[in-house]
Image (cartoon, rainbow, N blue to C red; front, side):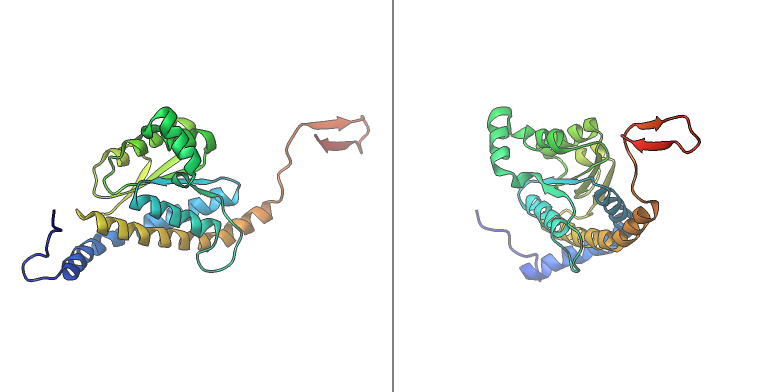
Length: 226
């Protein structure tokens, strides 16, 4: 089947840019959400949590791009942050798909790696991929904070996640391109928030854990943390 041609009076590139331009104006409204998400990612990952990310096809590439920016760096050097692209675990992915079915390839990894208060970010242009819907349910059952990058809402994935960044475009290519913009802006906000997060943790000081044992009855008795 031949690829669809451009609309009357325009080239393929012009048509594509027209669709992109139409989506850019409403996309500006994502600024506050991305800023808040960036602060939350910085807080949770600096405190020892992790970000799990998953997608299919082009969205899998977007997921791996995001985790690479966090484990590596966006621009300036900083501490590595724990972020895992679930589709990149190819041996686990194929084993789970073979033994449990493709619908479980992400959900089983979420149950394995996710801990309460970790973040699960699911990326889908349609918001209807069954393996991502199953992963969202597993994330919520495990106590993860579940977010989504999707195309237009309403869609099933957005309904399952706590919050969603939705790109209002009927063109899947445009949706993916703005998901990449969202990835870079999110990482920028993470990097901006990290110094304040680190400073706050340093001011509080190390947290003592364990059982406190009181030795002796004297006024100068010593307290130890077990």
